[in-house]
Amino acid sequence: MKLARDLQRRPLRTTLTVLGITIGIWALVVFGSMANKINAIVDGGSTFYADKVTVAANGSGMGFGQPMDIDTVAEVEAIDGVALAVPSIGMPMEDEMSGGGLGMEYISGQVAGADHGLESYVLNMATGRDLTAADEGSYVTVLGSDIARQFGASVGDTVVLRDREFEVVGILEPTLTMPDSSAMVPLAAGQELFVDMIPAMFAQDLDPTGVVSGLTVYPETGVDPEVLAEDLRAANPSWEVMSGSDFDEAIGSATAIFNAILVGIALISLAVGGLSVINTMAMSVAERTREIGIKRAIGGSRTRIVGELVMESALIGFLGGVTGLVLGAAVAILGNELGRESGFLLFLLTPMTAITAVAFSTVLGAVAGFIPAVHAARLDPVAALRYE
Image (cartoon, rainbow, N blue to C red; front, top):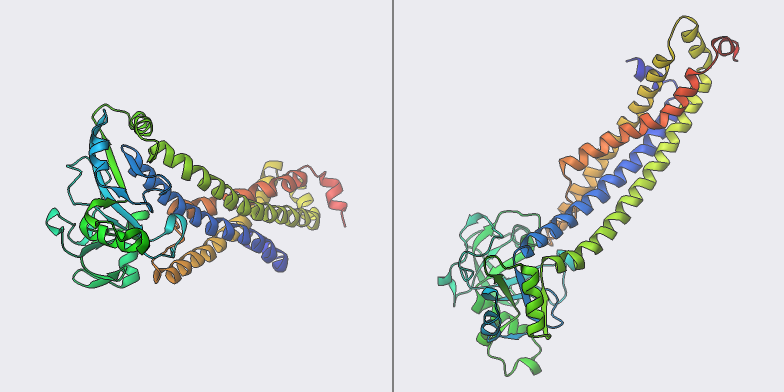
């Protein structure tokens, strides 16, 4: 209660100081939530590529784009160290990617169970069922959570993917990564959609059943995926080969720079808030010089003086942190709600981000108030009592 009364002595100044901390924490929460979402997508990709290698036509970019002959499967499987090569289809859901970059919506096609249990990246069903090999030849789909929300689709509904109607047989549990923005279809259906996507002058002689957009290559037991990736590149330089380290290097470095920019902006805002706390506490000490002198004269220790003032500044930081967290969370929730219709969620506010934000602001307030507090504790009691 005493701390609250001390802060109420100069309500306008205290409010402005809390506001300075609030703006910094708001920026930290908003930008931190954006970084969390991007990192979750990247982590999902790293997990997917950790124990396998993908092969696509040169210039495809993660298997999206150029067609490959399905006979490439046999060519890849003939290379030492390859246990299995599974053909697949990958393509954007729209010609103009709505999400862009890592957050794009895409269609993937593969024969269910073709990996023979080698795939370690497990996706769980929220409702309905997964695709099966028996679905080949039919137009059925399993939707990621974000795509299902975008379509407003449930199991049994019909959705349109690239001008073809598909029956929804299952919806995935949220993963907070790329599968949330995907629609999985049988390989044959994906091949048809893929050939339809190719300009007519190039697609007129293509047989959909002989075309894929990429291969997922599983190494034999004991074979290092990175070594296998080098062997695949050496076997055919026209293949675009991606391993786990390639993904991390291509995507991870870019996201690290982006994260650093986001956090840097937030920290600059917090630094300004910290300076405002120092200014407020310095002025508070100056105005309460006689009070501090009286406390010292009647036996108040320097440690107690420092403790009281540091607690006061820490409370300012805490109030600013809680307010900034509430406002930042509101922006994240509102932003995600606005993005639900398009199936693209930009923010991921985690408990750790929230706790870190409030703890950081509290510590920042305490540290910012420490210097004025030490100065106050060093005041000579007699001089302080004479201060006007």
